[in-house]
Amino acid sequence: MKTVAVAGGIGAGKTAVAERLTSLGWPVIDADVIARKVVERGEPAWRALRDAFGTAVLGEDGELDRKFVADVVFHDPSALRRLNHITHGHIGEEIVRELNAVKGPAVFVALPLFRSEHRAAFRLDEVWAVQVEPATALRRLCALRGFSEDDARARLAAQMSNDERAALVDRVLWNEGTLDDLYAQLDTALEELGVGRD
Image (cartoon, rainbow, N blue to C red):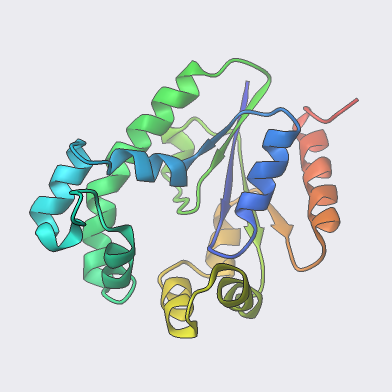
């Protein structure tokens, strides 16, 4: 079975690729979905975040106030490092568990914060990155996702650059054109992986 990570910064189009893969019938493990799962009320990561940041990070219902946490960590690099330190181990364990449950010729992991150590941890055969120019990501975050420009810039600044990400991956899917352009690149990548459509 081929195991491929699909990386990409916020606003680049990683979700569009993951949705396309799902529509083609491929299993996709989404690290963002898992990240939400591991911080649900009562989970070990939820307790660790509460202990590290205090009850201010919890809403009235006791659930993690994700918007409040995002506002804090994307304007405070040390808080972001603490958040990542607490959550990444739990997220990684769940990704491995889900990978071990998949059967078939290929599985994909949508992984926004790809790091070189993920290759061994998730036994990756390839890593693909979806990328756009920073100005395009900024425009998409503001127009399509309702971010303020300051918030969007803070989130983009907290990520690695396109050049840094490209140096870590095997293939870049450039998403400055239409969805059809992106899907055509994805089809080529699947064919070259050896799992393309007949």
